[in-house]
Image 1 (cartoon, rainbow, N blue to C red):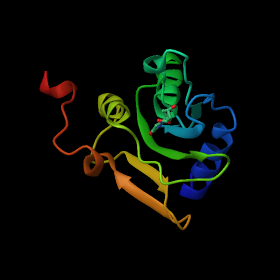
Image 2 (cartoon, helix red, strand yellow):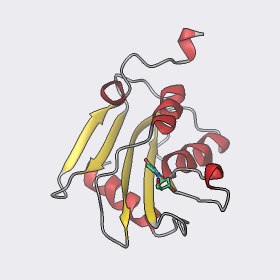
Image 3 (cartoon, rainbow, N blue to C red):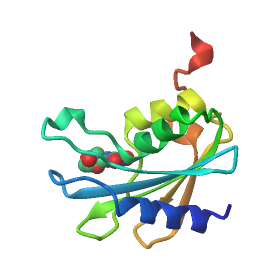
Image 4 (cartoon, rainbow, N blue to C red):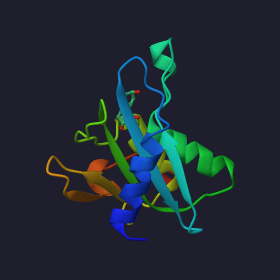
Length: 134
Ligand code: THU
C-alpha cells in the first residue's frame, strides 16, 4: 500500500477520535502483514490518565483480532480540524516494539508542510527493550 493511501486512512480514522478534554484529535492506520488495515482514534476519559492514544487503539484492535505482524503505521493529529506534527508518544513506541521489527517497521507522519515523513521504528526508539531482551 502506498504511503499516501495509509495516511489518507489515518485521516479517516481521526474522524472518530474522542477527545473532548484536549481537543487534540488523532487518527492512526495500521497496516498488518495480512494486508488488513486497522484504524484507531484517541479515546479520552474524564479521568485523564485512562486515555488511550490512537496508535494503541489501532494496535489493540488488531492484536485482539489475531494479528501479530505489522508493516507500517500512519499517524495524523491536531486541534480543531487542523493538522499538527504528531509523532507517537513513548508508550505507543513501546507497544510497537512488542510486535514490530525495529529495522523494518515504518512510522509515517505528516510534516508541517504536509510532506510525508517516514521513520523506521529503530530511529524513534533506539536501543529499545523488547521481547528478546527478557
Ligand atoms: N495522542 C495520541 O493519540 N497519539 C499520540 O501519538 C500523541 C497523543 C493523544 C492523547 C490525548 O488524547 C491527546 O492526543 C493529547 O495528548
